[in-house]
Image (cartoon, rainbow, N blue to C red; front, side, top):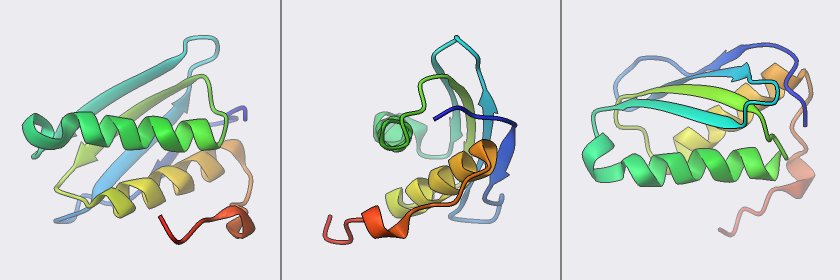
Length: 100
């Protein structure tokens, strides 16, 4: 999926995450993470981001995450929202497996 524009999802409230997703034409995936839990959960947060991008077949993106202790499900939801906004598409809830 190609990203058409930059998009933001989430807030800077406690226990949330703000994600800025930008097209990175031909530049691959770049992840910039600022997190209160980076030392402990940084690798897991980046893995969640990469998993969502793979699910949407996004190959070129620059992602900036400002994390305030968000749970994995919140990070996943914010990423899905940012990708849909950046690609100007809607999420297909019929493909969601709620038994993860």
